[in-house]
Image 1: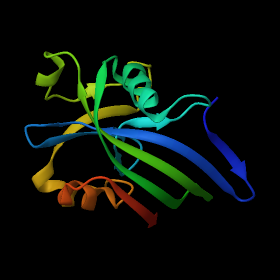
Image 2: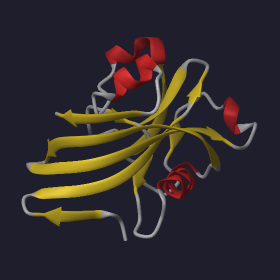
Image 3: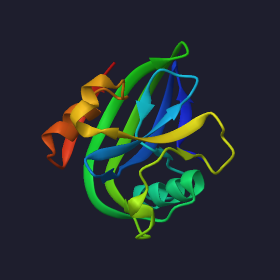
Length: 155
């Protein structure tokens, strides 16, 4: 069971995400029906720690094994989506593919769970300002390249 629940007029999410950088490009995912990008990851399940979650999510979404390299940030993210208020705890890690061949991937990947609307793209870090990446505070984290960071972010 995901750590996501309705509390009063909010949806509380506890999720994790992983940053992979290859050749000055970062892996992001995009719902082709939306206008923004996100860092791959997902909701933590009850009894599961955040490092295990990011490993599970990358295996489920991309069919790839990863290793956690470093903890980057906790973001307390407040936003609205589809007329619903969200309060999200977002745990961000630097991760890397385990397989040496996977480290050479530079093409757009498909979701292996069958979610045809999700695709995984590499975007140039030097052009990050040109992309609508959510939460918006991620751009600052990526540019400053400092960790760990705790951010309270309101959209």
